[in-house]
Length: 374
Image 1 (cartoon, rainbow, N blue to C red):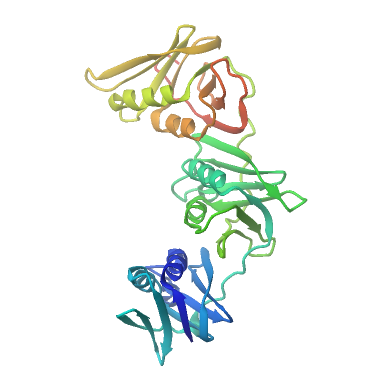
Image 2 (cartoon, helix red, strand yellow; image 1 turned 45 degrees about the horizontal axis):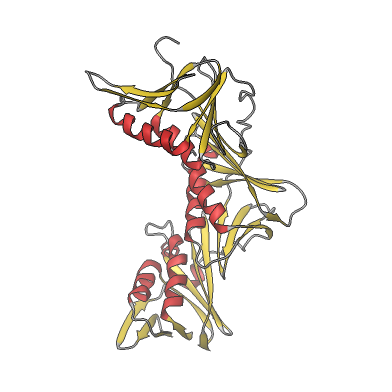
């Protein structure tokens, strides 16, 4: 194999694929990147059994072929090269990398031992990249961080007229329904590891919309692609629990408050919160008072203007959970609907202080903490 490529393009492709060239592989070959050169292009692949990253760029191919190179060091070398043409050439059991006056030699890994990489899943729709990236980043924070319940470490993806994303860690639920352009007529569901999904969306090079693929084969997988690059992720086994069943549909009261003002108040007051980082929202017709305290005489409070309806209440909630919810909403105002007992509260975004134009496509349920007088 011998190719001539633009350094910047090859560096992007290698850097993208190297995300799945494991530094601590189960098999030594999984630390490698596969370079496959065919007529006019080279495809760079990284794979670690959980996911694969594949990028194809146009190149001058003098001699077709494929090699398996040490992945991370190859990507770092190409990234460090001057912005010029780079030549990659196989010589016996090694590969030479030449650009301008710089030359490297790397040993090859046994290409015959490299596993079969799953094919990119068939396309089921297309979505705006910025919308998907911001939403995946938000809902991934709500997924369970450990694997004590494997399914809850994933994002429940629902494919239909809208693209639905939902996560929970048993203390809160985030659900978003995103507009997109589906090509699949029937409904489909998948559970995608949250960490891998977030990395895939964030790491895709190029610009423009992202294509979403879903395979219905025995080894189900989801693919995200754009501009000659694609990540394919192995799905979690099982059916995501119906966590929305049992969520309250009626509430004792609600309050609408400026979203940024509430977030700022929670950040400030949580500095003196107890070890559980709980803040208390004292909600009444006079507005919202955000308070927190901890052992000793530390405490803080601040008052915000708000529009409250029906019954007043005191709601205690983890500050980080509340900030995550506020961060994923749209609209300048947040509407918090609550119960008197320790039942999930609902957080939604809206357009103004009267609670108009609620964005029901984005909902965030959070479990309050019990207060001493509950």
